[in-house]
Image 1 (cartoon, one colour):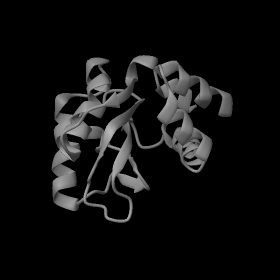
Image 2 (tube, rainbow, N blue to C red):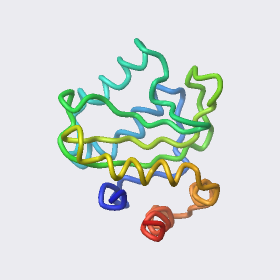
Image 3 (cartoon, rainbow, N blue to C red):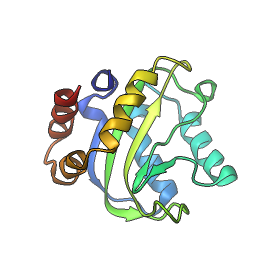
Image 4 (cartoon, one colour):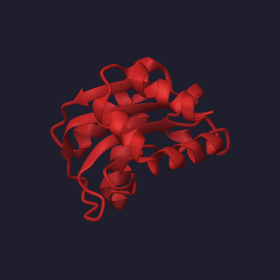
Length: 148
């Protein structure tokens, strides 16, 4: 379940980022500090985005920073970062990015059910209201738990 991947300390609200690269670094920081990913994992996300373009931007205003498991994913986890000021990613139809869901999966299957839950949340306008008005990480996590 999605709520099992997300810890309150992986949720950051109103983060200031200079640009899309800084936003990725900041969104990945809690997973790095929590021992879920390596620093190489973050660099691989940035490198792949520079090479392939904004592949991590999955829908309007939403990015899902991730890299292949073998690039430094240590455990199943997801962080949620809301940006104080949205950043331009280069994905014209979905910019600017305001919400980042940094993900780490230790294999190619364990995260699939959680991803389906995330897709459902990303089609829920109430979820965006929660992201925008949350005063503390548990406001977001409680909403996710309620929807599961």
